[in-house]
Length: 248
Image 1 (cartoon, rainbow, N blue to C red):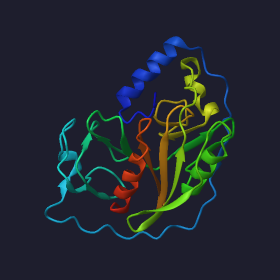
Image 2: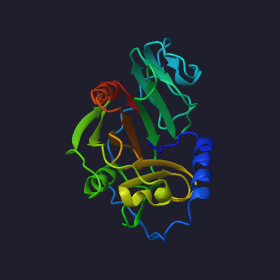
Image 3: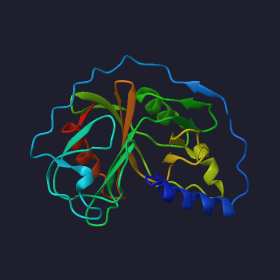
């Protein structure tokens, strides 16, 4: 199961179930380190939305989105993207997350995540406010994960770093939910690091995933591609989408 929870209510349900079936998690390192800053990526201001641009949040849920240019009134930094046929939304979205799915059943998709607050890999110290390079290097350094070499990819006028995490491994046992970082990495969007209640992005050996990390001024945006076995070509579709995406 992929435990990214874009809706807080959904995550709360996961946590309640986990607490009911688990003892208290083993003590984890509470030391927090700051990521090493990189040179700020120049940001090209997003072009003004044309009169024909649609608002993502005005599109219905579980409804195919008409192909065309879309902008978000919620997501920050400013986001606009060009969608082809076959996309729809399953979640309302927020200033920090935007999740788009592919027809027919939504098993494949792409999620935009703005500003990772904490990064935890294995038993290493918690990293606060990691930038794009820190996130990529930490995931690639995990001995639990099989990860492709990083590749520079365009995200509109910006340059992102893409990696792909091979799936096929054993899933995290339910009793070890609160120790998921020991099976790979956990990215947290919230006031406190995992396992505090927040939005979690799990990077574990069981599910094939794609990550593109890009620094947009002082904010790091992570774009996660999710595909099912045998449809990894979806990741190339995500790269095509990002090439026509404007952030900032």
